[in-house]
Image 1 (cartoon, rainbow, N blue to C red):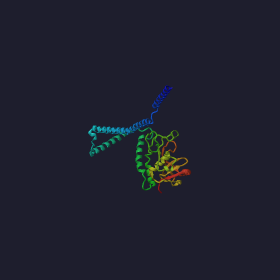
Image 2 (image 1 turned 45 degrees about the vertical axis):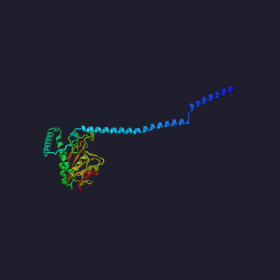
Image 3 (image 1 turned 90 degrees about the vertical axis):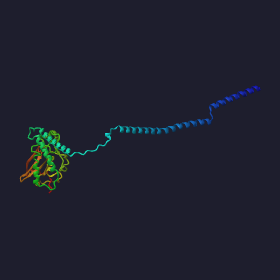
Image 4 (image 1 turned 135 degrees about the vertical axis):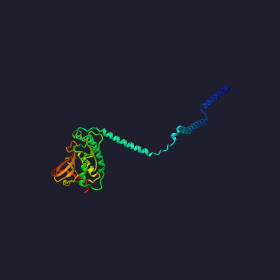
Length: 318
């Protein structure tokens, strides 16, 4: 009985020891677990700190290396550059004789070019007005514009206005056409011997003009055909800055005044005033070809028939 009891106690103790060892292997003391966790955290923090500190240090090192390389390259380029390129040349005083010779040479070349251009000028066309006459009239018109576009100090007299109008006959010859048909470079002084065909091309080749009378006709910008031509002559006679005023009493017309027919849409410039009527210079009287016409006569009775649609425009100050 004692032997069985002792064996049972021994067996129980052995089992309890095995269970205790198993428990120790599977359940580590809390202190050891805490130590392991702390070590892991410290290792992680150390890695993070190393990464954060190392990145700016590497960037700074790379930046320093790049700057040193650039400075080295610039120094090398400066050393390799030839001495004459780094030297600043001293300005040389121009010789007066050289300038004189250059001026004379340019003048000679200009005369030769002018002579060559005259020799190469094309022959005139079979029509009444040649291309050479158009070029000459255009040059005259350019000189004329310089002298007449500037406003004058005193108002013109009728005699002076008549003289200026007469001087424009060569610039805008009777029978010529105020257009640029067949001309690539043109201005308001261009005339040709080719009529417009408004029913075919409308105003494709008509000259245009804007000047001192443009404010009176805001619906026609720019002015063309009879209106543009009459406005151009008015500015050439009185100056673009001359005053502008209107009236309706046609018996008060003076040389240089413009006549505008509102309903029939035609403009004329008074060329002379007489006891029987007036003469006018105009363009595009047939509304079709932009032909320039001088000296057409209109009696006072004819003017009376137009009075219902007539506006007279004057540039005289009085």
